[in-house]
Image 1 (cartoon, rainbow, N blue to C red):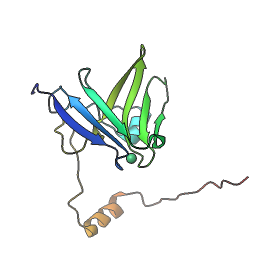
Image 2: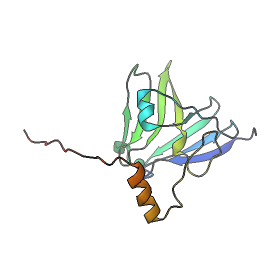
Image 3: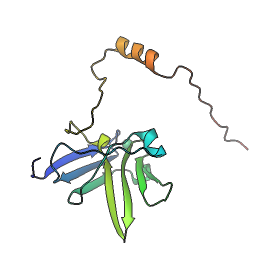
Image 4: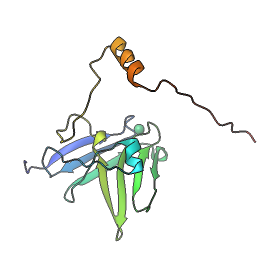
Length: 147
Ligand SMILES: [Zn+2]
């Protein structure tokens, strides 16, 4: 653990939402997984620190949305353009606290969670892997909007 504060950048995929985190907690990050039904679908890895400061910039505010469920004590913030879940907030005694999804950090940040990366694959390998591991029976039905 080092004690110097470092500046960690992050963003959604389309960069409509970017942020800078001043992180005093040292590295590696200690990430927290959650097994609720929401997190099972999104697979975020959370981290926070009461001494950290998070500055979020949103280019198009209309493309930022939030989702609440269960106890509705936390709001989960998404970019509508690219669908990325960036962070959650919770207002407690009038103060908004935030927890970050570590998956939205830009660049390699040492953490205690192992990751798999497919960037080095050529197209043939990639497509073969998808045929072997992805869902074969996929259908999409579009609801008709008419009355
Ligand atoms: Zn986005």
